[in-house]
Image 1: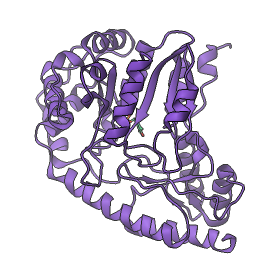
Image 2 (image 1 turned 120 degrees about the vertical axis):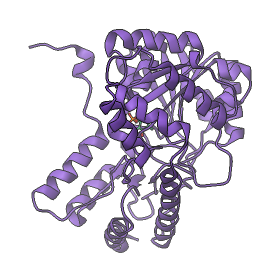
Image 3 (image 1 turned 90 degrees about the horizontal axis):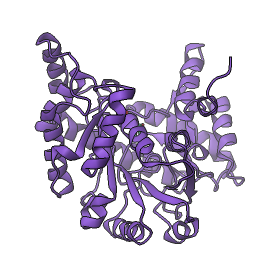
Length: 387
Ligand code: PLP
């Protein structure tokens, strides 16, 4: 039976496929260390669990308004006002079923057939497919060697069809945190060329340095008018299975996303809305503990990679490192590298090509120190003879 062509062309997410392959191999008896994880290896905070149970026991499990409960939208607006240091109101917020859902809703709302979107690389695997599905074309813009935005390349990628820019800071897969100066340049560029900016800030809470976290909305009224923020509970509160996130945008965009979702998916999960609201209102102490643990792991991983002679762009946030493998694998063919290391050493990691940048691999440190060290031992053994 024939199916819709755009759906037919959608591949399974490569990170999810690799994770599934690693789990299958382990289930079949192979000794596999899996460093592909895209979710915190921590339980959701106690407050989140208690609030979810209370919502169920209190019967607050019915449909809510399509853009989410007003109380939650107000709490999200307060959270953004606090963390982004610019005023937000509930009219700018649409609650969604996840960060992924917030992204797809925004892209379906913003993109018209044939629009080109400049996607700052490396970029999370789902962007390209979501842009294509919405009728647009993702134009990847290669980064500098430190994984920061290359403004010359950005200018060169511009065409009369360009409508928007997608940026993700802290970045998956590199952990790169865009600096305020870079956001300033980016927002000026967007203003000059009349582009919207989609800012995926899902890892915003997971930063490990004293530098203040920046968002494009902080760079004046024009930048605010053209920025759509996507964020959610998955990473910040270790709530990946709750499936809850939001879009923050100028009211007419937030409203359009809500109208779209009212027809496509309906109101977000009522139980998750309540749990998310409780967590946002008074950040549970587990979040800071999780960030401390990630910071320690990051420092440990970076020190070990440096000892191995692998150059790693500095990751200021998220829970990934993105070392360059060319020093030990001159072809830079990261797909072949990941296949070989899985086959020979039983280490599952993700090739940079999945994110549009070859010559690098992504290792997730959302795993216990013991697993991390076992994985790094395998990496070290694998590359040692190739130095
Ligand atoms: N954005 C980025 C960069 C991500 O890495 C992810 C998940 O891995 C998401 C968005 C979506 O998160 P979720 O759909 O769980 O909210």
